[in-house]
Length: 113
Image (cartoon, rainbow, N blue to C red; front, side, top):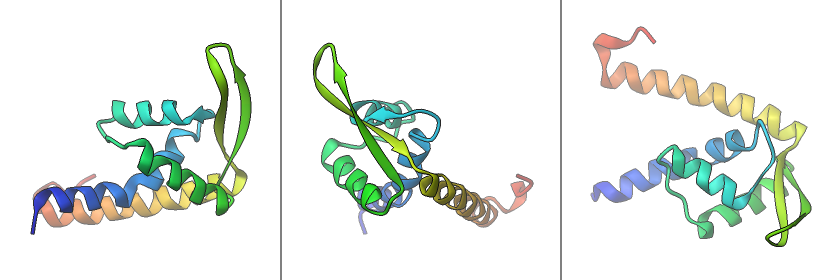
């Protein structure tokens, strides 16, 4: 089994959480989302982001607004919907439980967090 493949699958598994979290406090356009993920050392390419944003929109978790840009074509800003906020809360809760369980298994002596 290749380590790079396993690491990529782990990143893909938390990508929805990271994207929803990225736009939870303020609307962002795709490049801002990519930069936010990159600043957290989670490298994602446009070819991965756009289909996921479309899927999140189809599920009613995000919406978008077009806004004119002074430096080019209009930008599509993504916004978390009320349904998306509730989904993010539950997803965050699930992630925290999973993280705690994995930490307990991989670091049994430091399970106080």
